[in-house]
Length: 158
Image (cartoon, rainbow, N blue to C red; front, top):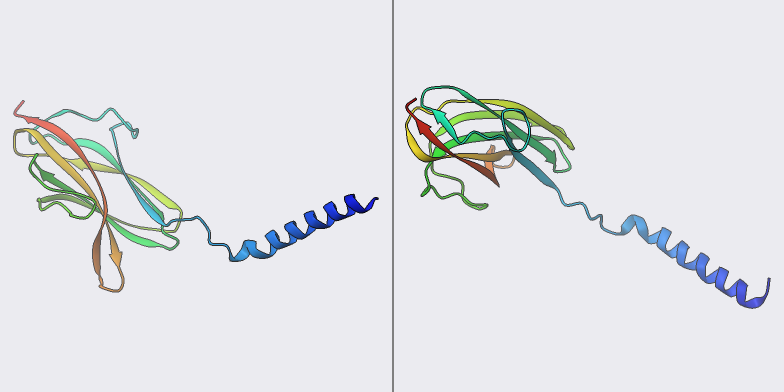
């Protein structure tokens, strides 16, 4: 092997050795996160009802996922509001809770579960608000994660 090829091989080995040595100390690009989803009656995205009859049960499905790096205790709150009900990633809705679902999930675990719902008051553009809360050990209480979803429904008498 000539001197030039040996120099290139040595440079390549050096670069690979440096890369292998620093790899364990480089920060991982893993951002912890939780997931919230609302699925239609066939457990898929879509097929959501647009109109329901007051006092008649209907079915949706909830989905939550834990990718926080540790086990988590979650609550999904289903609330009833209207078009003026404020909700955002930083503010939870000030609205009546009609259903609460609680679940402990291991890291990288998810759960899909039925939400048997019923609305009693008629109205157009009734807003079903789905909020994800997680248990905060430090404060010994549930805290709003900032994850929410909504479904607008017309609630009829027949």
